[in-house]
Each structure stands twice: as C-alpha cells, then as structure tokens.
Image 1 (cartoon, each protein chain N blue to C red):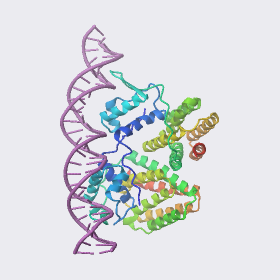
Image 2 (image 1 turned 90 degrees about the horizontal axis):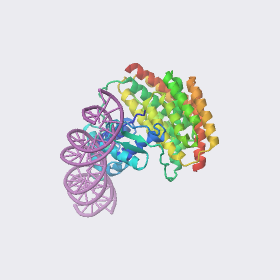
Image 3 (image 1 turned 30 degrees about the vertical axis):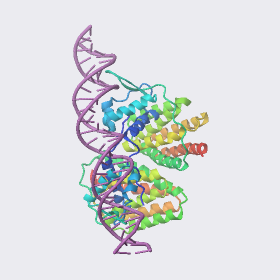
Image 4 (image 1 turned 60 degrees about the horizontal axis):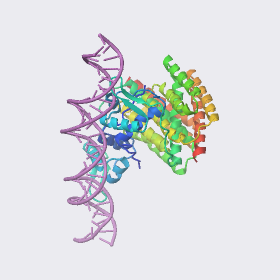
Length: 228
Length: 228
DNA sequence: GTTCAAAGGTCTACTATTGGACCATTGGGC
DNA sequence: GCCCAATGGTCCAATAGTAGACCTTTGAAC
C-alpha cells in the first residue's frame, strides 16, 4: 500500500557526523576553514551541544578536523583528509535510484538557473567555481566538480532544491569514490561544465537542461560500466 | 559559508505524526483502510512501538484514525476526516521554494516515466488513478489529484524520486489548503492530467515533461495569485 | 603584562526514546 | 462452544539526548 520510510536515518550522533561531513566532501569547506562555534552550530543543526561534540570528536578521531581552545580557537578542517570509504557491497537498484533522482534535480536546477535574471554576484560565483573545477588536478577534481554542480543549484536561490541537490550528490559520490578517475573523462567533463555554465549565463534554459542532461548521462554510463 | 540544515525536524513523536498523516493527506489510504500492525509499522519507521503509539493516539484524538483490539483488529482510517489546517502565516519565499522543488521533481518524474517501458500493471495503475481523479467531486479532488501525481512518480520505479515527490506534494498541499477550489480549474487540471498520462503511455518524454510543466505552472500561478 | 571576550571542555539533572516482557481482547476455525 | 493467533494496551528498566550552568584556555587589545 504505502512504504513508510524510516522517520530517522540513524541516531542523532550518526546523522550529525554525516551532516558535518557533507560540506567537507562536497568541497564547500576546505583545508584550514573553521566551522561555526559549537553553540551556534548546535543550534543550526537543532541538536544539543553534547551530541554535536560527540560528532566532532568522531571526526577529529578520524582525522577530518582539529579543535583548538581559546578565543580565536574553534574547529578547523585539516589539510590532509583521510582517504574515503571502504568498498561497500554494490547494489544496482540503489545506483539507478540515486542516478534517477540526481538527473531530475540537477537538470531541473540548471534549467531554473537559466530562467532567472542572475545578480552579478551569482554570475561571478558560477564562473569562479567553473574556473576552479577546470584548473583542478586529479586529486582535487571530485571535490571541485561537486562544488560546481552545487553552485549551479545555489544560483537558483531555492534553498530546498539546493539542499536536495547536495544530498543527491553526496549519494552519488559514494559510488564515484569506487571508480577510477581518468584524464579523458575529466577533460570531457570540463567541456560540458563550460557549456552548461555558458547556457545559464546566457539565459538559455533549454540548452542548460539538455547539456546538463548529456553531462549526467555520461557520468551515469561510466558508473554503470565500472560497477556492473 | 554553508547552511547546516537541522538534523532533526522535530522530536520523534512529531515526525511520526507527520509521516503517518502523509499517506492520508495524499489520498493513498482512504476511509476504512487499515494501517500495518503496530509492531511492523514501528519497525518500518525505525522507531519504538511506544513512540509510534503516542503518534497514533494523537491521530486518534484528532479524529483521523481509530484502533480496535483483537485479532482482525488494527488501526483504521476514519471515513470523515477532520478538515485541515488553521491558516498559517504566509511566506512568499517559502512558497516559491516549494514550487521550484516541485517543478524539478515532477517534470523529471513525468519525463522519466515516459522513457521507461512500463509493465502492464503500471499502465493500469496510471489509467485507474487518472480515472478516479477525473471522476472526483470538489470534496475529493485534492486527494485524488495528489494520488495521480504520486502515481506518475511511482511508475518511474525509483524509490527516492517517489519519496521526494511525495514530500514536495505534501508541502504544496499546505498552501493549496488555503485557497478555494474552483470548478473551471478542476476541469483544466483534468485535461492536463489526461494529456500527461497519454504522453507517458505513448512513451513521449518530451511531451510528458512539457505538458507536466504547463500544468504545474498553472497551479503555481493560481497559488501565487491567491496567496500574494 | 593584565584584561577579557570568545572559544572549547566538563558536569549534572531532566526528559525522550528504546527494547522487551507481559496483559487483554477479539473473531474465525475447528 | 472452545481454542488460539493476531492484534492493541500496559509497564518497566536501560539508554540516548537535551538544557543549561560552570570551568579552562587563549591571544588581541590596551
């Protein structure tokens, strides 16, 4: 009749760890960046400071962050991040599901971004992030790529669409982490990225959508090829 | 830098109430339908039976459901549902955000549904649900309309896309509940519904997407007109 | 070099949630 | 008419999470 999804994906601690990890994995916060003060962050996340602290402690143990006391102290992202993820059992249906959701959200975001009359700051944000992605070497590529895809969602100025894109991307990244990154793919991606951003900046929703769709289909094929 | 969304939307009790209400509001369960047994439902929802029972009790107090003991007992949806929602403070940005997300998800779902080679059961599910929506009177319309939109997502056979569409729809329904339902709108919706389903059944992704987009834009205009 | 505001670190009492055992009711099947 | 399996109803001990007060460290400003 109706599948009742779980109310909670895990306990508060686990969910908090995931939430904190997201901007690190998506390349939104980089080496040396400081997280908001614990009291503030706990409030944003809607959890108690105690729970937040356990989560931060776990991230510190895993080598993602380091905390320093005192005024001008805080919790800082480490420069050398632990390499991700032990290989997980592969689930074809789960991959296809993640790809489907991602396709809907990201083509939708690209189209919407191209229909808006973007403020100068948004245009610069896009070209900046595009530039950084093109200039990335293999080690940095995945994070900067994520960052660019997220930037496209951000300029739609639609909070929940952006959040959904971030979540979908996080899910896809689990799969991407398990396949090799090759130079030719990277160049091809860069070309597509440029095309998409150009379409958005020149307010061409159809081109933005179709180019993004092509780009995503490319990645989807790669993933299916490597993981099937 | 990054907006950390809340880890929890409320306490387990509140979230459970919302979760249980969703299929009732979306017209997925109707008068007389029985919810799964508490032990099973608690497991599906990932919460303890005690918490589930508080939520069920709250729904019973509000008149949504009734529980009966004994074998062949259970918790049943009442035939006369309480009328929804005290008017809430209106937030234009929140409405636009909900509309944006919905647009991306539902046009994406329609397109994807039309690219799949649908099994007979799915085709029947669509035509059935379409028929019920067309036949609905004003009192039933919103629920059957929701049901149809959800059915389109369901035939994509993509669990998380379907879940996201259900959530987005639930959000939109909060707004729809605050505007009048008029006969002409209803007829126009029915026409669009038929067109969308036809496009999906004849495997025409472009038509499915664009027709769905037109339909959603119509509803969006109505909402903005009434609520601005 | 003293001060002090802002940050992380610790503790405690309270509440929510869990998990599991056990009780009570019901109606269909024998 | 009795049995009994399936269902909701109750209770309790253990754990997770919250709210808030208080302690400690730090470095910039004076």
